Amino acid sequence: MKKVVLLITILFCGVLMQTQAQKSFIDEQFISLRTITIESDSLYEGHNYNYYYEQYREAKSMRIFGIVLTSLGVGAFVTGVVYMNINFDTGTPFLLTGFIVAQGGGAIWIVQSIKVNKNRNAMEQIKRSTSLSFGATDSGVGLVLRF
Image (spheres, rainbow, N blue to C red):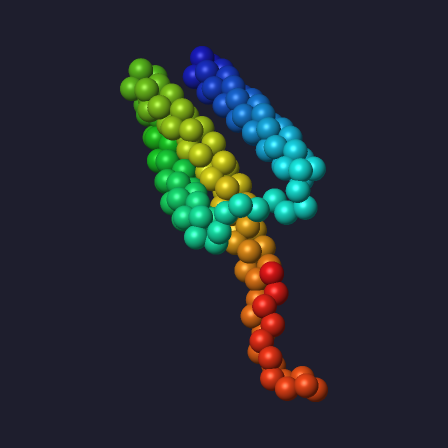
């Protein structure tokens, strides 16, 4: 019975901590996006495509790290649950370590996924904002640069 109560308490605390972290992060991002939107029509002024590409690459690799960390944490957590059925003392360290690692990995995964999406949107907006057209018109041939 003690094992079940401990397991449920740990899971409940983890879900509560994860929800609070996501809510806090989303509130901060909403406020900063609203502020930037008020200041300018474009969210992505002042930086070129290469800047956002580098940010995108870094966020993508950190997102993969978060996925791996979460997977390892879940694996350790499951191992802890199996060992708790065998012997309570040997399973507890695995259970707690897996829980903490999975929570940290999940947070990294979420934050970096948001960064990946924001930088991808910035790169797409920069691509759309500049174009060079070549074509024939009534008066001849011409180049048009749109930015």
